[in-house]
Structures are given as structure tokens and as C-alpha cells.
Length: 244
Image (cartoon, rainbow, N blue to C red; front, side):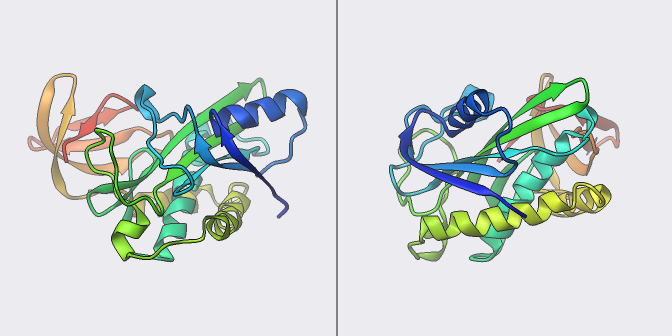
């Protein structure tokens, strides 16, 4: 499958960089990836910034243009993006999982964050931009993020970032190729990788803290938790927080 890789030494945000390309070139190729040595305004989920030491980590965005994917199946983009990161990291270490909806964890520590922006038109999902930050060679984290970790923290090894980008785009190309005929298989693989699935844990929602067990993630992305009274609770993005 064809793809395109663009490197820029510094930019405000790789998601914004790709949007600017699309504005100039509406027919921008599927699987166009932009990566940078440093983002001056990198964004995370919930309006947070993403800490990344210059030249030490993977900070990139990839354009995904599925054919005829209904808007109500857009969560599949989140699934293949997080599975691709999982697969990349599992080449170098163990204990990698996906914290719903699309953070990637090593044990109880966050190694990857993701911001996915979707564009919807009358035919369904026009395109998605997956903005991804993976902590690779950074050894010290200065922000107040509670639980960051890098691949170098885990293994003690320094990695070639360009080689890892080349690996990643081949991995996500493989996952993308399954969107047309194996949506169920993608979803099942995603479910099998969920952090703390089938394990009793503490959570917080609008009503406070409670103990429960993740039992499912619905295809549209809702997280399904069974609480200690065996009541079934379902949550959309930003409606529930893990207590770690």
C-alpha cells in the first residue's frame, strides 16, 4: 500500500500541518504522515498540552481516508491507530496495552497519547487525522502529568526515530487494509488489548468514585463497566476517568 512521509524540523502541531496540506491539496494521498522534531503547540486530549523533549520522541500525525466508512463506525480509526502503536512498541518491550479510548500504556504508565480529529460529510467519514505522541528517548519528564514513561526508561536503549516511523507506517497500513473486510476482527483485537479489562478497579464519573470492572467497549466506542452491585454503566469519551 502506498504512503507518504513528510518531515519538518519544527511546527506548531502536526495535525494542523496536515490540515494545511489538505486545504492546499484536497486530494492529499491516504496515509500521508507528517512527523517533526518538535511541536511548539502540541495538543493532547481534554485540551491538555503534550510534553515532548525536542528530538527525543515520536510526534506525528497521519491522514487516514477510508472508503465508504459510515460516520457511526468512526471509532474504528481510533482502534487501528492505537493497535498500530501497540504493535510497534511490542517489538521492543512487553506489557503494552490500550487505555480506553486510545492512550497506550506500559503497565500502569502512559507511553503514548493520541488526538484524533474526524471530518464527516454526507457520505460518511471523509477523513481522519490521528495525532500521535510516543515517548521514545526522553528520560526525564517535567510536566505535572502523573504517570509518563518512555521506551528508553523501560529498556535503557536509545532508538532511531526515523526507523521507527518507517516501521509504524507499514504497521498501520496493514491495519488500514483490514477496514474493508475485517471490522469485527479489528474490534476483537482492540478489546483483547484493553487496559484493566475484566479486572476490578476504581473509576470516577460525575457522581464520584466507584469500584467496577470493564467488561466491554461497544463498536461505537462506549465503555461498558459493571459496578460492584452488577449494574451496567456505559460511558462516552470524557465521561469517566480511571483512578490509577
